[in-house]
Image (tube, rainbow, N blue to C red; front, side):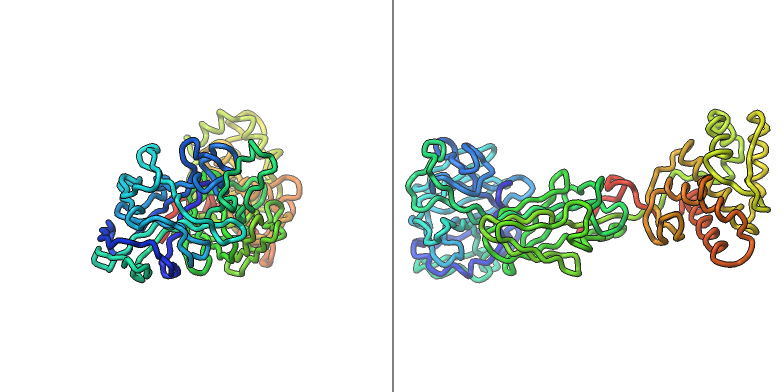
Length: 500
């Protein structure tokens, strides 16, 4: 992953001794508006030496200072069209390392790409639709780890006009910049690990890995089979600079970060999306947050993270769980299965129809005895139709039987999806409030072995068992009438998330 320039004010740069000209810059988008990002990258051969591999564009550890170039960034994060200048400093931004005139470090960005420069001292090369520019010349960093900071800045007085004094004072306080830290073997003698195996790379930046996942069971933890969510913005900051990283197609993100303390938080989407996790780092069945190499992570009660990043440290599995709830579709009522349309479908599946009633499920009549069918299809169906249309809640398990077999038929012979629903009853190894699939709900409520209707076939009398039977039948009725609150099995069944 290319590293994104980070948006921040330029107040920390105090020794711009090389600024030699006064230049007016016009920024599209208004005063101080610098959207998107810019990126450090390798240059064309022979300036394509990256310690992670020769010619690797996705680089943040460079063999030589001449190998570090800048571009406008990918389409999703490119720079706002306008005029900019660039500079190289030490990591804290207190010492200017660029050795040429400010007037030779001007850029014009158009369509998200560098389209023109003022430079006579920096090598340039076409790259795709734009231009990439070599950051050299610049002096060696005083940082012992060989770390530098690249800046791409636009200054404005709020009216679209700006001047940067030649005496080296900072730009106006409302100037904004993109910054990116990178490392080069220090000092600046060339170092090619393929030629010289003893050549030592700079210490890598710290790495933070994470995932945005679809928490289908609402438990606030990533479980096996729960997939990632693409293009979800993850915000992070070092306390000064706000940044955002979108998750990839698998819901993952990876960041290479300089030493420091960072706060991570997902952006919250509109309803019906709900944030669920992470709730309990260390107890997930897979993917718990872990740190090596000096990094440290704290999960906060508001489901955000604080991460201390060290050079060479790695943090894995910053997990952010979300899920959506919608109203189900595909339900068919008991009236459908008792009319000619339903009859035709059941006749086409006569064996499965009879097996469901006589073997798979325990269905009860008004007096609590088991309901069964026999004979040819006409005889079976007529008995079924009479039984289901006569169902009442006098014995709540009778009406429950009628509603649950309707849902079972909706699943087996109709188009009802196997959504997740919130179990209304503590029974059969499941807890009230737990999210389970509709198939599981049907099995727990009506299974012929140890299901609720088999265990409690007559719930005429008031009490807990009757209350539970009513709770089950109410949920099945909602499902059959397409009124139940459900969770689709994947994020593709949810509305597109909208972020503030």
